Amino acid sequence: MSPPAGALPYGSLFRYSTLHERGVIVMGCLAAAVTGAMTPVFALMFGRLINAFFAANLEAEVNKFALIILGVAGAALLSGKCYVTP
Image 1 (tube, helix red, strand yellow):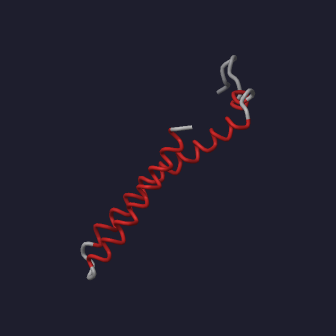
Image 2 (cartoon, rainbow, N blue to C red):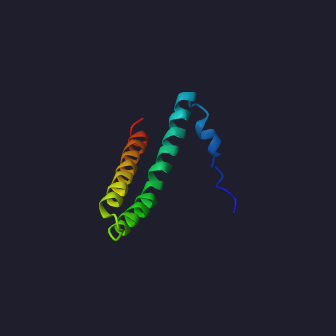
Image 3 (spheres, helix red, strand yellow):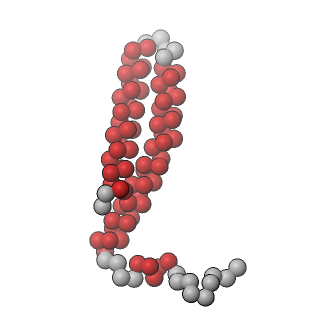
């Protein structure tokens, strides 16, 4: 299937952009990918936190995974801030 007659290649969209603008676009795309990856990571860590409730040393395991989840949430906050705010 051929493109419509007036279609332009994607590279021409950035013809007049500056190096700074291209850098911001790349940074935003990378931050969006990191933020999107946080959801499955959070789900895995939450599952491990639930399994920690059945461990012999309950308090130590729960504290460990609670801190890991806190770190994942902090990373999601920072990466979300990067791709929402230029």
